[in-house]
Image 1 (cartoon, one colour):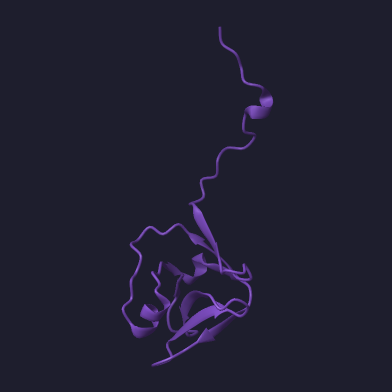
Image 2: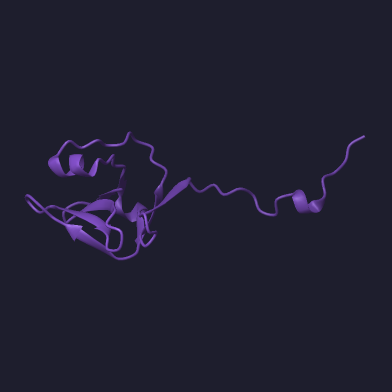
Length: 107
């Protein structure tokens, strides 16, 4: 004898075919970043600022990263990169190239 599950337990829409995404926030949640699940190895930069931040970066095309919230940024050296942080809690959230230099973000 077989039974049919109640209609309420049958999904009404098929599962999404969209690639999985990651949503991350700073400590106070004022900044939200949404980006695809990383498919490449994370980047461990050994420059002085990345060592101080103790970060591993995931790199994506800028068009794949959505950032909401108000950040401050810091530039140093040749001033090609902007390191962004939350204005409220100070957590480093991402870096991005100065406008017009490259088309990628690291989060």
